[in-house]
Length: 584
Image (cartoon, rainbow, N blue to C red; front, side, top):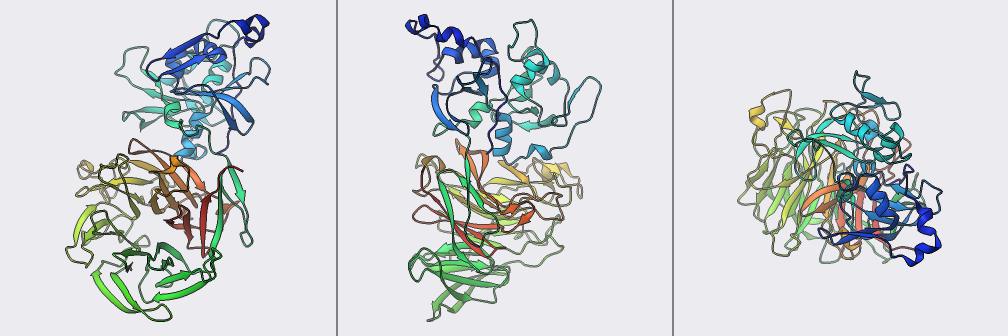
């Protein structure tokens, strides 16, 4: 993520550098709530420029961190991040992080695409971002700021230095504490309006520091480019990671699985209607041998090894493949289940995903037959469950328009039952800013709203029936509209940094040209979890859409036994491997 800062004011560092100061212990203020203290220039800055209401309590001790401008001292607070730059001349020794911008980007929300504001009486329009600040937030913005000149009151420049420019118009959002409030984002802050609070606490600042702080690192990701022969553009991955190509020229690889018997890779090829096996014949780390396991399986997309046997999910059936001949082809194809197929419009979904749950049963996702309609069968827009032999088919969860990727997240304490999460695609044709794709905590018997509503229970205009949405389960996390999430895995491997364990990795297939003006997505993202809930999103691999040239579309994800991650690209006919190699 790009890192930039608006230069901010600092205290009288010259006094701290005087010879007599060396003999005086630095003044400290400690907070029993976190066990951390503030001292030196950071404490002066904290006290003069707002203290607890503006910055909150410290989340860590001052420490040296590496950033794009070099090494510098930092300290994280509930609502901000301080940086100490003694090489800068006064009053620019301390800078504040652009946490509003950083968190929006982590969430996959490109604020440059947000609807703009309009000139209004009693409001202030900022030409730099095209957004307005109105009441109840304008008075708060004008009343607070950094202290530049020692004069009474706050100047425009002092308020701008503390909060930055507005990045959004006011909107109702749910904050990290679970409260739904009127919210407006700024470069360095998030304003939240709580009318039930007494004055002067009706406008509060969001806890951006607490939401962005990562005790394992705390510094926004730095990316580097990786170029390989045959790639029209480089891919970008975080520092410490690298990515290479392990297969090319393979037809439309979608979801993948490793055969436990021989470590070969099997995938579904949705455009060729085939199940394909890849082998690394010479052991060089690239798959160089292709075998066709089975054909004639309509839009086959997902494969899985269940109790040592190969299963494949086609549009209209679930099959088990066995008795392979010398060429790798399955002599025996047993149909275990009939699945509903067909499409009512251009947006009908043909892919079916299969996985074995912690309970040993089969879980099958079946997408909708349309964009928005009432289905003829409850087995569509749903996740189904059955026994491994196909018996006992039941509806597990409904109202899921197209949950292609799903996986189970284990409880961190080792005793909590694994939870099923799925990435669902929102509807089309309401504009490029609607409807969000979403990450759902999928529980048995729950309904997630489609086709009657979207997002947080917003009625679809085709039905306009709020009563149908009253019992719908809202999304746990929203993705950008039309990004089309496909593969979803929770990272539990041994190779990535420890902070990745328990986080979701999501492959976004990318936006469709008939829904958006500017293409987006086409990347693999990391969704960070905290206390069992998704809290932020950041790019993990990006670059398949460069300068309007879309040359790849991530589809499937698979964590290998060594902890590396396979990424299938069904448009480019490639499979990549993402590895963590550490700092170099």
